[in-house]
Image (cartoon, rainbow, N blue to C red; front, side, top):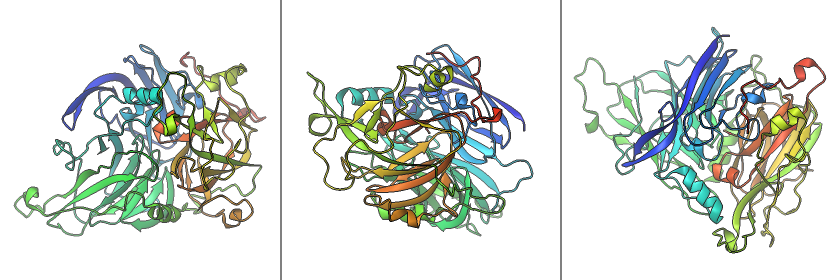
Length: 549
Ligand code: C2O
């Protein structure tokens, strides 16, 4: 492979959307941030220089970082943040992966503005397992807030209430014509008739799963989370924060004398307020050359119909269609045997209000979120460094529970006591443990889907269902042949999902809900995978410029 160098200058930039200008944290003044393009087998050296007052760290979402958690990026998990005036070089090689991923800030809510595509092309001369696209286009979804998102989350944490919602969704940073004062900020995809385009869809939104569709066009899904899938056609797709989906768009054979909107809006099942708006971009056909140029404004404009906001049945049907390609060239290495089984509840809960505080959460409490009823407390130094140096005492406890500490009826009547426990607990796994993990939505404060993301691994989604997971009955229906392999999965609203992965990557790996507000409330935990016996089964030593806390 080649070595590719990038420089990311973290700097403030004034950006205007919806007629609101704000000074925000960006990479190189760009919004969305720069696109990284590499090939499978390449080494990336990305120097991040912090010129702003905030601490920062960058995560390369979906990159496995074999034995090299030092380059993974979540602040206080694998590294201390890069402080003002400091820099750090993320140094990693892309092994055995190709497809669409993305990068984003991984501290507080800075990823609302600090994110961009991370595209890994196959090795030279390695073809795609589908028709060669005429062009490839990344479409990265985001959320635009008129206000400063750091202020929004710190206010929410202080008051215990739900944070203010976004003012718009965006495609490649642009909200589009359905918002006030936004028509000029519209993403336009110009296409020729009779061609196949590869759209690389990325959901970098902070807090919302999205439905996406293009009027009068069918999309063929070919990849999810940088893993090839069995192709299938769909009008609409669902993409959760943290997920990526590649689709083929075959354009109409002749100039259609029409223009088409592509739109995205949220899939929401939870409580509370949310941004119920729609981002639109435009699919515009180049007019035929023999023709006098056509005024696009005069052409009829078609708009797609998206599923209802809470359409869980669409979400389920869609996710059931996703299957690994499972071919000779791209096999699905599903762990057939399990060394350790875990059952984790994921969901919202509450924390007591402190004296003299008015708390805006349920019944005068504060919102919290947990896994197995433990709300993760961020340490003040990085877990991976403490583990590597053998100085973990006072930083974390290796006692994450294998079952929830209470709440044994997950989808029935909510319990009287909805309080979470707090702790910095990690789950320790010997090297090469084959893990099965069932994640159950608790529905304590209403059923809600949680897109859970695992760092350092892909996992296979072997089963999912509704109601309470039944450990006698449900495993009989697990798919161990061609389940989808990915890094982020929606734990269904009022249901459960079962995943399997092989813990072959020594280090400390964060797992969390990719709805940023839930992460802030504590819906996260870390796996600590121990070194194996052989030299090539051990965590690499830390780089010399690793930031200090
Ligand atoms: Cu894309 Cu830990 O996140």
